Image (spheres, rainbow, N blue to C red):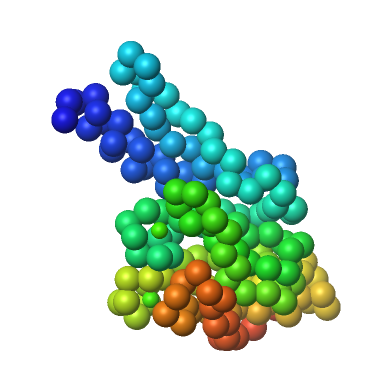
Length: 158
Ligand SMILES: [Ca+2]
Ligand SMILES: [Ca+2]
């Protein structure tokens, strides 16, 4: 393996973990070795119809070593993840309202992260339930996950 190809592999590993939101779409960026050996970065659209996308979260949700992407939207009742490299969409849960933030971390050591989700967000106390929930897989991470409420922290009046 040449230095250039090792560098490309290193950058591909880093860049494939870069996900972004553009108006109405979710994407990722990867490094590729172009013709003549030069490095270039290529944008891949993961979902071109993610309305009100608010946050991408990168985590390996199926323990295959490839970083996957969770696309969080404030207006869509579903929370879904996109499986790298083909970006197949898998619904994690439904029935959500005003999801505002998510974080993925393996809390129980099984190699698949749990997902903490803040939803029912509002900017006033009257409109905010401020629910914090935890999502866990049931053995097949491509099937819907179990969601359970952990706490509520409504917005405080200003
Ligand atoms: Ca993966
Ligand atoms: Ca876990």
